[in-house]
Each structure stands twice: as C-alpha cells, then as structure tokens.
Length: 111
Length: 118
Image 1 (cartoon, each protein chain N blue to C red):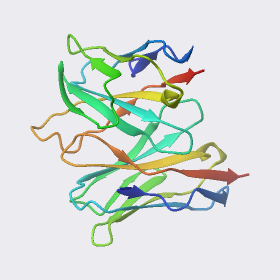
Image 2: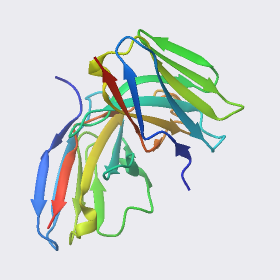
Image 3: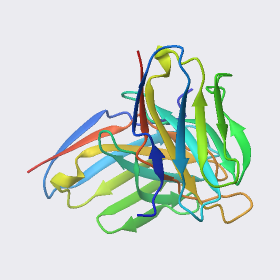
C-alpha cells in the first residue's frame, strides 16, 4: 500500500523558471509533511516542512503548499538553479514518528 | 560538523556473513531512526529509538536484523547471515521530539552506508 506517491519520476525545467514537484497521499492521519533533496551516494537533505494546520510554508526560494481536502502537496522552487538538480522526495508522518516516503522525482535544471 | 554520521560508508560482504553498521546522531537528539533505500525507491522505515528504548519495528525487519542504542547515544544495526536481497543503502536519521506526541519533528539524515552482498 503506497500511502505517499510522487507520480512524476522526472521533471526538466530551464534555469530561472519555476519547478513544481507534486505529491499525493492517502492516509488522512498524516499531520506533518516534509521535502528532502538527495544527491547520488548521499543521504537525504531536509529542505522544508509543513504542518497539517497550515496550507503554505515558505523558505527562500522554496514554498510548500498543502491541500488537505485533495490530499496533495507541492513544492515550488523559484527561480530554479542548476544546483537544484537532484532527486526530491516528499515524506509524511503521523504524530511524529516514522516517515513514509514517496518514490522520488528527478529534477533536472538546464542552464 | 555536528550532523549525523554513519560508519562505514561502504561495505561489501559475501552472502552468509554478518555485518554491523554504526550511526552517531546529532548530539542533543533523543530519537534515532533506521531506514533502507533500494534503487529507484524512497527510503523505507526499519526501526526507531527514543533514547535507549526501541519503540517500533517494521515488519520489513526480519529476525536477521537487530538494532541497539545502548546508552541513548549512538546506535548499531546488525544483519546476520546476509542475503543478496539485503543489498541497499542503509540510512540513519535523528530528531528532537519536544512534545509527547512528537508532532512536527524534523528528521535529519546521515550519509548512509551502502551495502553490497555478493
């Protein structure tokens, strides 16, 4: 049972444009959502998070949107930079314990 | 650097051998998690500790896997009688749970240990 899904395995954008990565979940008990960035042969690096009591959280170039009724979250990166090229994972937790991850989306930002 | 560290970074072993991995969390963090990641997938939860108590284990964690956090600081993950299917990246993460429910805690990951079983 895949409770967190990232339906786009890959995304390619031009430098300076917006990158939008999407994530859907099925478990309505999830109350905390996170985005991680991962380079090959490294561990995931935390980017940004959002609690289920909010619908938006912003940190510099990164904004996460949460639509609880649709069980959907998205990560917006503006402007995109070549150094943003990596695999992005969304993750969700319930009452602060294990993280359930999506399959990841490979973002490529072209110069 | 005071991030999560893992040792070794790479391990190659023969089927049937035992292996042990170590994780040192961020010093003030009370929770420590182990995940496993295979190619093309997101990390999958294995087990976690709050201080020295092991609070949850995934059904993915067969009897050949054991984890400890003896003094509530570093943790070890041992795999006995390794199988080729154990080949994966083993990730450790730590967090600081401030509230009883721990809601809203952010987990910070180490660099991982890549295991290859021949």
